[in-house]
Image (cartoon, rainbow, N blue to C red; front, side, top):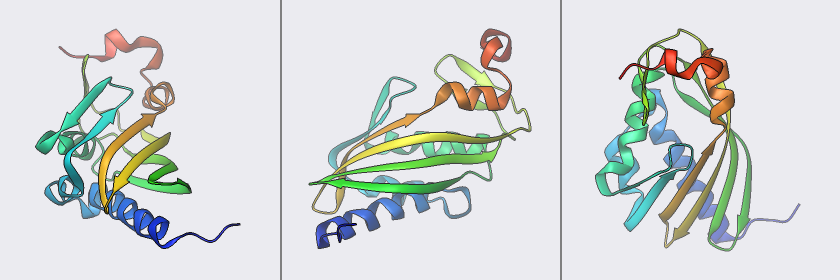
Length: 155
């Protein structure tokens, strides 16, 4: 295994801090947003939406409301220049409404352990781009709503 460069170590710490700020027990949405560079963005690939500025924190708040015990298990970090790729899972119990672009899934009480892959671009210790690829079909299956989405949504 190759040793990490100083820049890779710094980038990994930035990303670990970002995840820490998004977890339910340590959530700090304003500080999460402050980790992004001016003009930086968060792209929720599954929802097909990019967030800029203060809106970057919306998904942190939405997931914390839906899963009050939300936490991430980080599996692997990969580095290439200013890019960090992280394999992880999103974990929590669905106790609040999960707001999606199509509507809201009311609480199911079920646990999720949804696979996810995040791609970060960093410059000078700040996130310039964060692309989040959640395995949405698996998440919805774990909530018990995958095969009946329309019946599960409230408009």
